[in-house]
Length: 269
Image 1: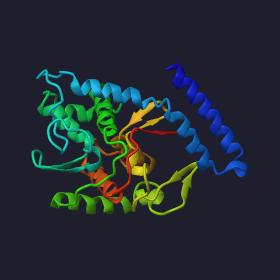
Image 2 (image 1 turned 135 degrees about the vertical axis):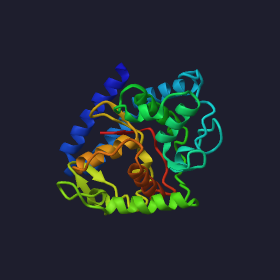
Image 3 (image 1 turned 60 degrees about the horizontal axis):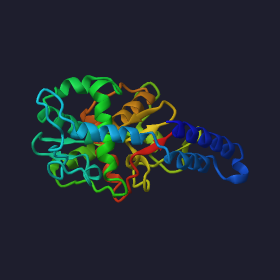
Image 4 (image 1 turned 180 degrees about the horizontal axis):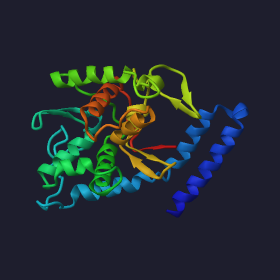
């Protein structure tokens, strides 16, 4: 922890210096990129990954079972390559599921937990915190692999089109949509570049960067929380965990990110 704190402080100092001298040494975005690069050496996300691995192998729940037979789309227990193909349709649930909702299905069927109770738990608390750790562990196994979401099943195609509609739908008190921030190139808020998510934004950007550790609040965020916070910032009603809306948006962004390389677990400001 001491190494992580020291690295973080040095990186923060580098960021301040880079931003302060941006005219001479590059843009603020380049300064943030250097800041993240320095933090990667001691990325706290590694702690969540380790916790997730322990939870994956640990016998827990009313059935006293592990998750080692959880099928994330590539067969029981196979985690490598699963993340970059999610969300996808699962025949056993009859639904298109992302990584987090699929993990809850496994916790329910294999370990005996009540999926509804987990989904109602606040982010960062109880079993929901465990879902985030598990998602970090599973997603990390696909680091460096490229996204290739399926569009073969009718529900997968429907979710893509629904997600596309939602992405461009304006509403809320400020008349915002996802596209307000992420619908075109060369947008920025404060010092943060905003990727264009209507197309492949590039390796490790947008959908290919979450779950990620957020330095500003010392929290690990999965895509469900990332989307929840986006709705909050747009002044829309916040969606329920695992809702069709969040899954549809994930399918839209994930399909658009085809061939993008995953850098999970990433680190964010």
